[in-house]
Image (cartoon, rainbow, N blue to C red; front, top):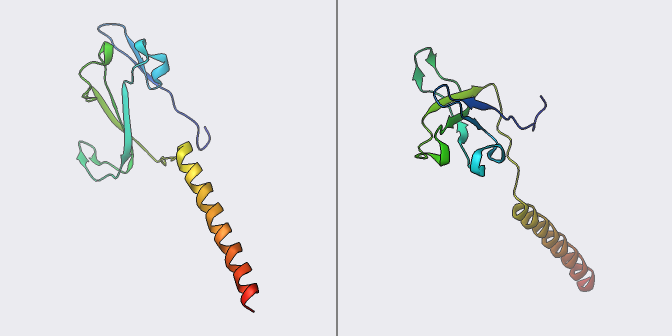
Length: 115
């Protein structure tokens, strides 16, 4: 694996034989069955203090279930969260850089006129 690669995993329910994937496109009805978020660490579990990592929880009922995502929970440690900006964020950054460049150019032009 390389930084930025997407990890796709699944669970198979022993009682129903259903499979649920971390990629919603692979699930029946294209529903999301996995929730994840950065975890700061510190909670004390049976094996000691849980280190920082990525918290993952699973909803294991067909049709989205009760959406409480507490049917299976775990933390991936020794990983880093990768934040990918949305297209609107990129557009705002580019527009901001353009405005800064325009203002700098305009102030230089104004300085030349006053000299």
